[in-house]
Amino acid sequence: MRDVAKRLRRISARAILERAQEVLGSVVHPSVPGSAPWTEVPPDARQTDFDLEETLDESPIYRDRPLTGQDIWMSYITHRRQPIILTVDTSLSMTGEKLALTAVALAVVLLEFPEDPIGIIAFENEAKIIKRPEERISIQDLVERFLDVPAQGYTHLEDGMRAALQMVRGLRGVGRGRPPSTVLLSDGKYTAGRDPAYLAPRFPHLVVLKMGQERASLELCRELAQKGSGALREISELDALPTIMYSVVKDLLRGRSLA
Image (tube, rainbow, N blue to C red; front, top):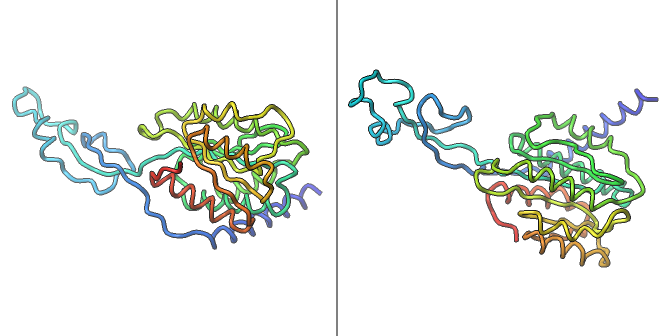
């Protein structure tokens, strides 16, 4: 039975990846300029060029020592790193098609941005880390790992937000001055823990993606986004989830403010 379940999970993951490929579009990754000694140019640097002005400033002509790699300066550009934490509800209220489309949305993001510091947290009775921001994992393994999260009866939104906040705090300085953004995907209902609104102001930037058309939970989602200095996006049609999440993450990585 275990082998059968494993094969079914792999088949499901492959189907999710195929769906995710259909959503992908073109993305221009943001870059930042830099200058450093030749020996200290980052390995991911592009468009490297000799920096004559900086090299002359650091020239050893008037020093009693030979020229070294530290004296030759290069200009370059590098990919700007914008940490993002995706926090997704996997409780019973998010099972079935919602869960499958959530998996597609996560696959879309990781397929397009495999090198960016993106963390993923799932929560139901409790929060569970699916991927740490600096972890490198194949998309197939990521989807299977996500599908392994059991859908349980309670929705502990408070615990999910606490776990996300802890991950955010561990990412200080990664974005070169830009604070991490958190994207919370939920229907806005919680059946365990306290009202999580008190946690929202502790986030530097919180974007809430509300699933479903239920209006009763809309006020909490709006409050979380406002207190978290972010934005609210309503997703009334399930099929739109992968495209909307992809669009939100793309804008965040390109430095656009969602507020």
